Length: 259
Ligand code: GLN
Image (cartoon, rainbow, N blue to C red; front, side, top):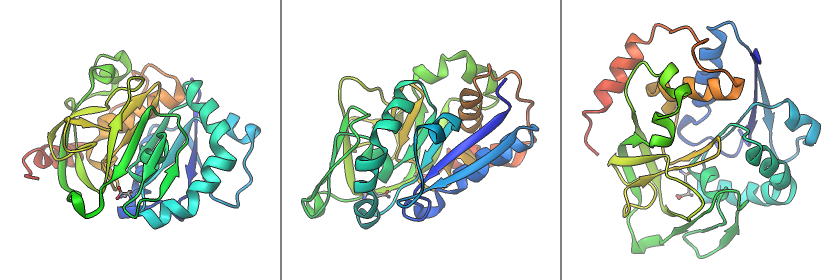
């Protein structure tokens, strides 16, 4: 077992809306409580970044941010980080990308003022913000995880809960998935990717994009442990259960929330 979780947290200064950084805290704490060593490495526009750095990493995280935050970092992302992130993702590196960064993993993001930000093109999807023509997608969310995840023995081993994700969303962009990517989940409550096709987020290899914003792993410990097990390349059985009574109560209560 790879007994060290090496987390690369990209753009913590620019993409941290609604406390997305809480996901890094949750992953770290859940690993530390199991005696797993954790290292969090922050990477931003001016950070040193190369292949030897990425070889040490087994979990990548990026949060979301408003259009202004995206505009200030996407040039660096696409010009300086694209190839190594593509290689990492294609080689089954584990990553979680929320809202604004999820959008930038796609082919492009057309923002409300019509500016087109070319994305990484790692995820086969694109996103468009229709400005005042369509309302923002805001509110509580609930979605049923894809069978890609629920049928995975690793998820079965770590899951002490159910097959639902709960959280909230706040985005203007609407994301449309292409043929070479699958949804992360099916919307039960909320808008998801685009408020039309009931898809929420995306899964490509071992990388996940989602519109569940803020520290959503706090209420979804099964998904947090799934990410940890995948990052450490273990079956999940090695992770002893934690005292999640309060967390499970919060998860269960969230399932009763209206949009
Ligand atoms: N600017 C993007 C949108 O509104 C992303 C917002 C976010 O990350 N919350 O769609």
